[in-house]
Length: 582
Image (cartoon, rainbow, N blue to C red; front, side, top):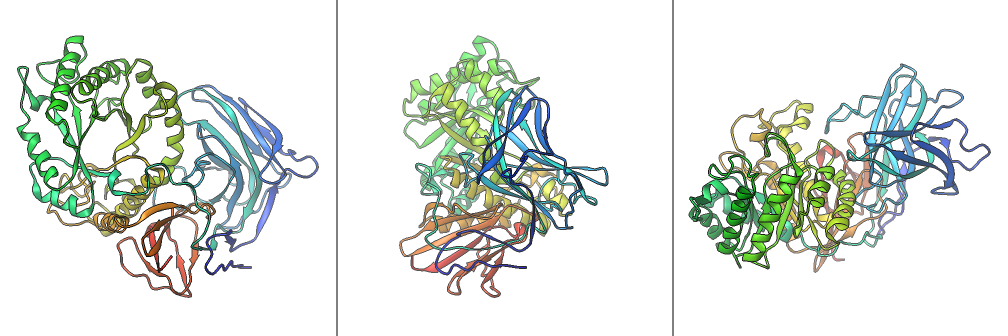
C-alpha cells in the first residue's frame, strides 16, 4: 500500500514508505541476540537502542583491521527485486561502515554507507536505507554489485578504521528491516526544525574561490568575478620568483592587481622546488631556510593586500614530493615558511598540509614534528558522493584540536569534478558530452552546498577553465569553462547558486529528511528558499509541495509540477523551492 504524508505549511515530520517491510531484529523480545555473532576484534552485547534495546558492537581494531556483526536467520530471508535494507545506527566517524549481504547465489554484496551526515554531524542515531538493487549510475560500481540472487543467507554490518591507524570504540544498531523498496514520499514545511548553522557560515561568497592556471588573463578573471567567486587560488612558483637571492613578482603582480581591481582576494600556493636550492624538494637546512626567505619575501610584498597562503601542494603524494612523501621533511619546510610569513606580516593567514584527500596518518606525523599554521588545508577528492566529506571532517578536527588547539581552521583549498571521470564513464559519456557535463554540474553544485553546510571558511573549486581539448582526459576537463571560455553546465549551476546566495543567508538544514535527502533553507528579506537534493542514486524519492511554490532545477529552469510532486532523482541534482513571503 502506498501511504502518504501531507503537511501543508509544515516541513518534514517524517517520511512515508511506499512499500511494506519485514522486521529482521528489534532486540526487544526473548533471546534478542539469537542468530547474531561478532567477528574477531569485537564483541556484541545488548544496550540502549533507538527505541528500547539495541545491539552494541564493541571493537578494538589494529591498523588495517575490521570487525563485523553478522545475522544468520533460521530460514533464508526473502527480498524483492527492488528491496532495501533499513536500520538505525549510531557510530563514530573513526570507522567506515559497510552493510554486507550474503545471498543464495553464493555472492557477498557490499553496500558502503556513513553514520555521520550533514544533518547528523555528531554521530547520533540515524536511519539508514540501503537499496539492494544498487544499479548506481553516479559513482564507482565496484562496491555496488547488484541485487542479491535469491534469498539472503546472512546480513551484517562491517566496520573498518577510516584511516591507517588502530581504533577502538563501539557502534550501536537497532530496528533492522527488509523493505520491499527504498522509495519514499515526504513533504516540507517552512518552519521545520533545523540544524545549527556553523559559526560564520551565513554567507557563501566569502568562503568560495576558484583555482586558475595562468594569471595574465583578464577574461577569465572577469568571468570568475561575474559568477560570484570572491577569491582566486594560484601558484606563486619559487623558481619563477627568485634569481640568485633576488625576488621579482612582476608576473604575480599582474594577477594580484587584476583581482584587486575587481574586489577579489588571492590565495597563493607557495610551492615546488628551485634549481639553485635542492631541485624538486628543498631538504637540507640551507635549502629549507632559502624557501623560508622566499616565503617571507612574498608575505612582505603582499602585506595588507587581501592575500592568504598555502605551503606547498599535496606533499603527501609522490608526484609532488618525490621520490616519496616524508612528513618530517615537509614539517621542517612548513615551519620555516610559516615563521617567515608571520614575521613579515603578523596578520597573514597561512595553511599547512595541502593534503591530497584526508591523509590523517601523514598529517599526524607532520604536526608531531612541530609544524603549525593558522589552518590545515585538504583536497577532498573522492569517488563517493560529495556529502560523504561530512564524515571526514570530525576526525580531522579532533586531530587538529589535539595537536594545535581548537582555533586552527580547516580549509578546502582544492576540490572539483571533471566532466570526464569515473562517473561520466559509467554514463557512457566523455568530457565534452551532455551526460558528462551535466554530471559535473550536479556534483559541482552539491559540492558547493556541502562545504557551505559544513561551514568551511575556505572552499576552492578546481578548476575555472579546462586545461586542454582532449575529451577523454580527466585532467583537461575540470573547468567550469571550456577552452573557448564558454560556460559548461557546471558554471551555469554554480552561478545560479551564488547569485541566489548573494541576498540569502543560510538558516540551517532540515533535521528530519529521508536517508540521502538534504534540504538547505536560505532566508531572504522577503522570501524563503529551500535547496533540496538526493544523493542516493537507487531510491525514488518524491517531494510533495504546496501549489503556491515555484520550483526550478539547478540551472534555474522552471519545473512543471505534476500533482504538486517533484521526483528527486539523484542524477538531476538540486532543485530550488521558492515562495513569496516567509
